[in-house]
Each structure stands twice: as C-alpha cells, then as structure tokens.
Amino acid sequence: MKKLLLLLTLLTLNISSFAADFTVKMLNQGAGGIMVFEPAVLKINIGDTVNFIATDAAHNSASLPGMIPDGAKAWSSDLSKDISVTFDVAGLYAYQCTPHSIMAMVGVIQVGDNPSNLGTVNVKAEELKSMFVMNKERLAGYISQL
Image (cartoon, rainbow, N blue to C red):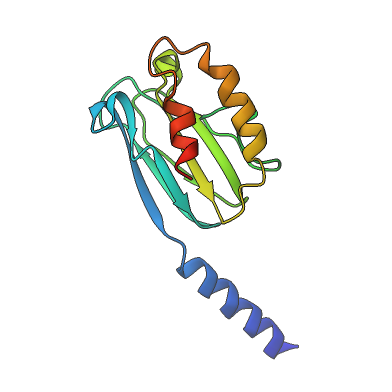
C-alpha cells in the first residue's frame, strides 16, 4: 500500500512538473491590429496556465459565456489587472476584453487535442459577429487556426 501511495505521489508530481506557463498580452495595438490579445490563438495542454498581462490600461480577460467546455470554470479579471488561469478541462475556450468586445478584442485557446465543443463555439461566434462594429471575422479567423 505504501508503494502504491508513493507511486501515485510521484506520478502526480511528474504531471504537474510538465505543466507550462504561457503569457498573453492585452494590447491597444499589436501585430494583429488594434485592441488585441497577443498571441490571440493558443494551443496548450491540460494543466497549463495562461497569464493574461494587462500591458496596456483598461483591458481585462473574461471567458465568453457558452464558449468554454462543459465543466470548465469561467473567469473575469478586473480592468487593468493581470490574471492567471489554469486550464483543467479539455476543449475550446473563447474569451474577450469586456469593454472592447464590440471591437472584437477576443482570443481563443485550445486545451488538449480534442476540441469537443468546437461546434458550439462556432455557432456562438457566428451570433457574436453581428455585435462587432469592426473586425467582424476576427473570432472566426482565430477559430479556423486551430
């Protein structure tokens, strides 16, 4: 029994030691245009953490309702504040900067190899397009990169 517990402990430590950290900047202007997350598209593994950095003021990172996997925890940072999010559920996550959502300040993260909620995210992305006053194809373009 002790050997089994030791083995389980070692496996748990090994899995967490392989988790990676990623940085996403919240920017007024970047390589992808104005009001962007950089990078806006990420593919990560389960257990990885994304650090959203408020590089420019008056931005936040918030998951988009209905655009994260079932069982995943939604997030929303305060304006001009960094937030770290650890992704423990596989699937596709879409997020936004709340005050700049009409400008399509959005991003997507694929966690794991199987974005099982891709269909749902595509439907919601099409619905959101009508609310964007600019960059109407940005979110769909990001999703297509996965």
